[in-house]
Image 1 (cartoon, rainbow, N blue to C red):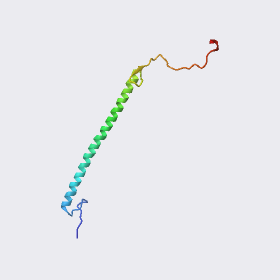
Image 2: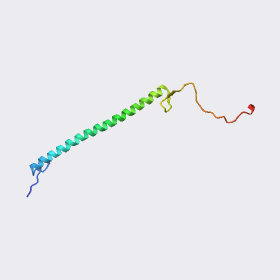
Image 3: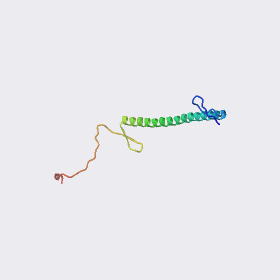
Image 4: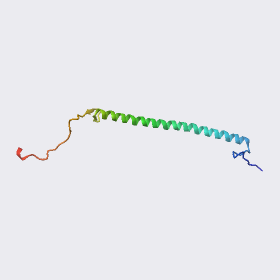
Length: 100
């Protein structure tokens, strides 16, 4: 008859070699979890920092462009607008009868 007993709610005390193996395997699993968690944290932190840097650079670029008052034409040339000129398009609808 095999007697299963536990010491203070711990693991079974039947085989001391098995107990030692359980402790070693448990310690290895806990250690591996800590190491993998640390590297996952580093990778996630790097992704967050890179994203923040890209967003920050873009916001800085837009603020700089708006402060200069320039308009980007798409080909790398920035055209400055005059503040005192109102731009617009017009179309002649009809001619006056007096001009004929």
